[in-house]
Image 1 (cartoon, rainbow over the protein chains, first blue to last red):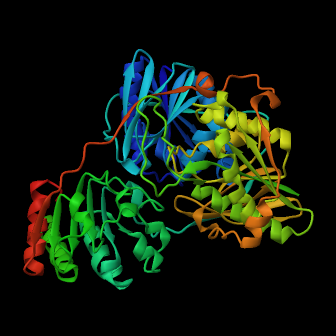
Image 2: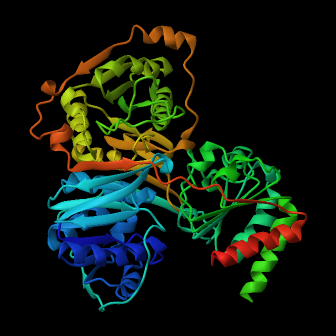
Length: 325
Length: 262
């Protein structure tokens, strides 16, 4: 491992913040390893994203706007990334820790005979050896795994763990040759985006989450959404709220839901059961609003305000909006 | 049609977890071993596909782990799997993603299958990378996060969850399928199932049966666990009683200001 290659996952050129976080970290890692920082962008919309990525401190951005990437399930992506890895030479590959990122990473582990550090939140490089820091078991343990010096290593990267900063020399944008002799069979017949154009929960810098204390689905719309919008964040929920059918399971945070690591977590009417705690305890700052002064969430909140969320949240939203104006 | 489901045997996720400082592995003693919850969804999916396919379709459970855990596979047999294959060898200890997937692939190649169903994640030390690595070692299409699946005319058609929504994909068999938790709640074992499971076969394999040409276990692993520790505990913060909505909001607002979060 000498170079660093970032897999820039995107949809029609739209990508998550984690892509730019990886691009920024790639330069630091490449510096420590004594190699170059590369990125790979594939599929429809790739050239647009590549030109944005070129403003980050990368040496080369490899682009392939190949329609097969969006027509077949992951196989073309894996082939392109393996081809880029071969062309670049010994490298550490940075892949976002998303659903499809994990699939790609697993495939490349076997394809490139690589070790993998998963859900990485920090790196240390010493003598060509890359140490990956990862929270495990919902943040109950922090592990440090070393990827043994080898040709290739892989790290899946937790969103919001690294900072993103454009700048540095203009990267060289190059087109990536299609790997020859490939035939793909697993076809994508339909690809439906369900998101409302809002921020993905795992990527949001602020999460406003609601629980049983909200009493029904309406407060998620009338209370939490405006607050999340004012704070530039996304709405989440506890398991109790998802189980009650007030919000879709895609919003559930916790052991059987999503793990989020925003800079700010606002818990509204959430008691703070362990099942919820493991999904959010790595947040930067935790503020909770609860009727119960003894709610477990108080034990790991930086601030617990005891009171009526139905009165506090609209006032808070007003204050924040006024401050922004 | 032969469906194989891989299950991992893990310490009860609801039990307190502890890691042995000497071996740096999970302490399993005193904690009940269960099927990895995500794998129960995979087994449920396999059993549903079998029921829909009708006669001539079988479900085999495959697992890898220490010999002492072998009988835990009866839980999967009680849910309705027909037989089990258990790969157990002390030399597998300390395997990373690459070696785990490699050893599993060699064993699965031996037993053969039309469809391989794998849980999406594991509850202990999860990387989420094993299904992909396994598909690659087996040179199989890898269809992940399924919430619905059907097999017709030798093709697999799947509705799968994506980061932003869902996709419908179709492709050839054999294939590897992983399941999302939305596939459907795993069934409970019936009393009849539990009794029947006692008579079902668990075949044990060791590495000698596989003819591996690459090292596995700690020796073959490309990752070394250096250290682990609990994160610094979060200090209990301030608790403030709000007399009304405005004062509660002001308390939070001032706090966020102080932290430079607004």
